[in-house]
Image (cartoon, one colour):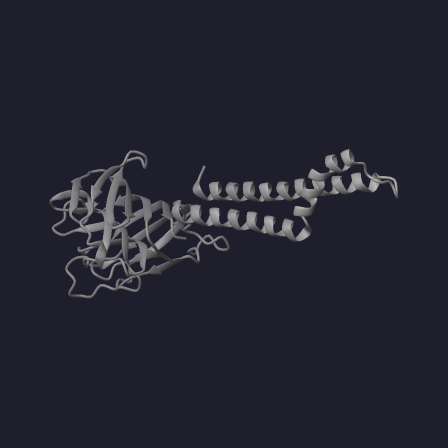
Length: 293
């Protein structure tokens, strides 16, 4: 069961408990009222009658409408607080849809396309997948698809990538992957690499071979299909890769979290090439878990 489903189930259980508690209280009071109404008018209760009736009478006295309202309100507050706390600390998995529900040829409103500086950069949508093409010499103004909602606190992001290079013999790099960066931050022409407050989990191909990893940790990886992952927990960052999306190889990313602690971050999919050829990559299964939503 996903975390969103768990929270929904929890809300339903809490609501059911509150409703049941209110129904039991009301039934008990009405039962007591019914007993008293059944007594003949003018009859004097004997001492034993008073003793047997006193617990119910005392309970009714305690549970006057005002008292009952306070109890039910307290249950609602406790239930809502419990759900809020669990929602804050349980990571909720969100699968991002690429295509708009109203127009399958257009991006979902939660996503934003940035073509960069090449007129040949573009994207196409095919069901649950997005194919991104990066035009020639697209560093540092490369194409991106960004999720507009800022990330906060702990999060976990992953995506499946099918990297389709036109050639495997390059003198410079081409790269595709996941990117977490400060909101509204841009690269400039003088940037020779990602700034220290940008974190990427990617696959890259150069004349030295095919590599997968993140800042400070790269491993040989020859397959064109890879699952990429980025995780932030407290002030620690990790990235991971997998061939099937289940068995992950974790790597420690060399990130100075203090540079990012006071910044709003966004996650994006990207591709670029520093060659005169365009490249394409298919992205799917884009998942974001964010405990601060």
